[in-house]
Image (cartoon, rainbow, N blue to C red; front, top):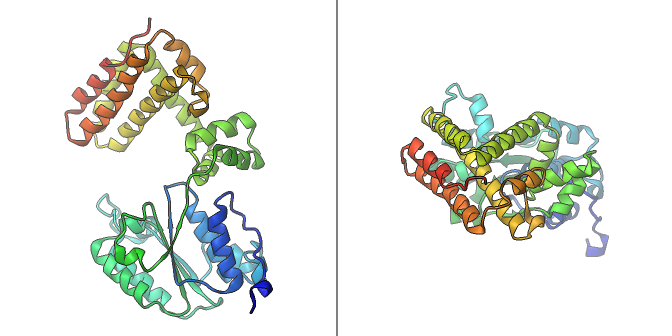
Length: 350
């Protein structure tokens, strides 16, 4: 078939990532499809949505130039996770199938990869392709990598593998070299904000979420639909502002966070320190006239008022104290010492 006769792909329901969508949609429309793709990018960037849409396009019952239609039985069942020729494997699905749901189950095991290989070795039941989406590839065990490599080296002719990872360079070269990489980058704030407004968000809220998610449109869509998460975030910000505005509250909260850390909730403490760091960074940006780069735009006026008499050096010291606390906790410095040392370096309100 000559190039001019290849059906032009339909517009996929993906916000942004035009280059990635163009590569995959043209492959579907032309029929020239690789047997393995590697989608990379940070969490929340839209990798899973793109992988699922690609799978829909591969099994869609519409004409080639109209795939995915999103309305046929195959498209609907892929979206619902019930189409027999599309398999998704991840840490989440492994945990759901495991009887040992504990913290040690943090890598994809060789048993999981073997089960996937067994599943995709069967010929498709309804579609022309059998599609396997493997998430969390950068958290595959060493033994499981060998099993995965065998599949990549000798895939059945009807199998399309879609691998999802955070960083391309973190994967073994033997895996990377056998996949076509498609890298997803953070999107512009305007694009994310516009996509949120199309979903019914008010301009102010869309702007805030676009700043908070830093171009990760999948995370932005999740957040706009989760009012509880937005309320929790605002409560955490208000608590952090009280700490910044009152040294006594800061010391008390440092002790509380140390207790939380000792109880094993380390990620929660790290997230709170990241919030402090973000607020101090925003104040530094505001004081240097870089308001466009501020993330927590909804509280910057209050934060600026609190720190109106602080020097840039004092704010920079607060930023550095947060980084130091994260480092100290990572090398097992006593939590109360690390967190108290952080807050005592914060400037005191006039």
